[in-house]
Image 1 (cartoon, rainbow, N blue to C red):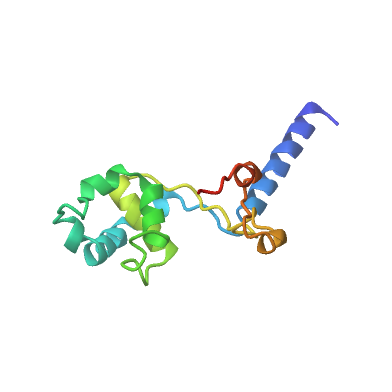
Image 2: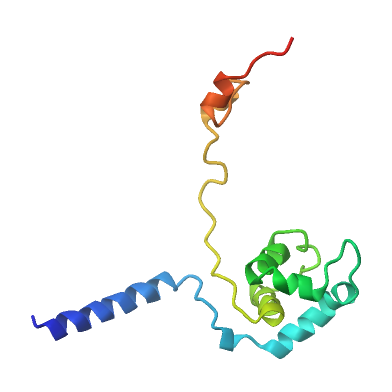
Length: 142
């Protein structure tokens, strides 16, 4: 097999792997974001507070300075989740792009175990700690 054939095969294989990795949740291209819809979403859901900031409500400029990943996190699982009720993931990403001009990183899939350090043995041991050295150095207060 010639070098050109191996190189072409490698490119095709790499493209196939990349496509397979994106089959579950393909990354959104920044050009695919409907900025007019994102502006409408921001105006409807966010502007009434963030266009009139106070000591507890950050301004639009302050929010945009945190970056798109923090905006997505706040809207999808953070303190702003109740206010983002009814928004799709695409709507949330759109608002993040509208505010920052950059795409958030792709979301990592949730792992199978949210508390991997918890063991079946911890129920039997009331002084159990996920860090054994911490549990071993605990001293009873007198």
